[in-house]
Length: 146
Image (cartoon, rainbow, N blue to C red; front, top):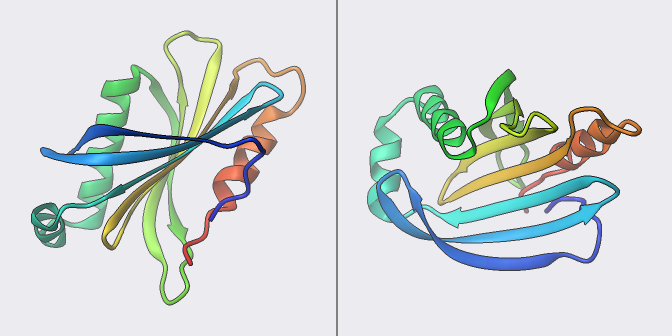
């Protein structure tokens, strides 16, 4: 669950998670120069088993490296974060990236959460007309698992 402006558009597509094919669900909205995205993918059983053998920090390092490769962005900041859940929380990573166009920034949180892989991201102008980064931050911080 996240707090997101309306209307919300839902799309699915085939994607790669590690070296496994998965169906990715994206929930997207835009408001006042900020684009909001929640991506959710079920982690295939074979990949879950491999992930249990890998340290969480190593898996998160790999996820950030893959994000940088696919987006072409440059990591400006990153830190550890957690995703609260109904019975337990999950460790994740937050990164702030400058996107290749030089005019946009991305704030993203990445979580391997049990059987799911979750990305919560917002893009906003690098030179905002007002404090759009505040709304991006509120969005990524609003995420909770039920």
